[in-house]
Image 1 (cartoon, chains in turn brown, blue):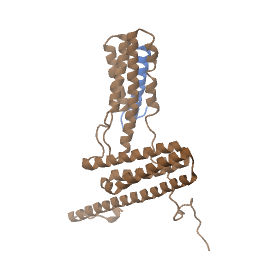
Image 2 (cartoon, chains in turn green, brown):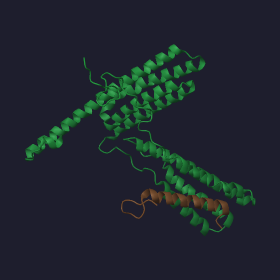
Image 3 (cartoon, chains in turn cyan, yellow):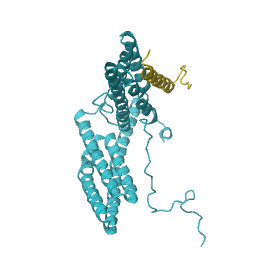
Image 4 (cartoon, one colour):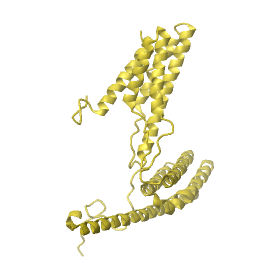
Length: 300
Length: 35
């Protein structure tokens, strides 16, 4: 009997019941900005180390202090950029506890001032360098995020709980990655990355709607802790004596967990869709009452 | 230099310029002592 041509790679030919396509470990990944540009800040003040030893002891101390201050500023800049990226990646986030980039701007100014003072001895030139350095640094890297994000309209108790659970879950995920690195099993690492993506999907869902936390708590707490413990045990075992049976069992566990997490996330999202439907219905009723008639096709 | 949004220079352009000036300033002060 004739059969329609089709297959995995044909349009509309996706065979039913096919396994979920591998989404790749880089979905949603972004290049960090704490790279090349910031690294230059570590190299630029190095001539101070040479100058320090070309003159008397007082200049030596000032130059070395200036070098240390500028290197510290460069390090703080990098940390500040990483903190800001973590802040931007989340939907609900507190502002960083230490405004690292602002401190870095001030320290850059201080370092340049010290370096200028070491050789000149006057006060005006170092002051000019300090001000210029601090202003340029704040222009180049911006200020730290100074306000909490995503906390509007949500009571702080709820969002605190969500933030705590998300932090804890991220800790578990990091511990799993670290443990598996010891095992040196590339395939298991890729598998774990996929599982972690599923968990992060759930985290974003919970951040979107903190009411989901109660339902997801068991998953993000107990199950994830269990997964971490299993990963650590597997890594220990695999480092000492690789055991294919244990490895298969571990990979099967990851698959089971991933399926459960995906199903739960889908259920949580379903709840959110119900909420949206209710909002739309309520708004429609109101508009009807006000005498505004909506064409349904406009909404479709 | 990049321009955008009707301004003379975009935000990123300004940031890049500020960064280059900052590195130049640090190099100058570190190498010569600023004199």
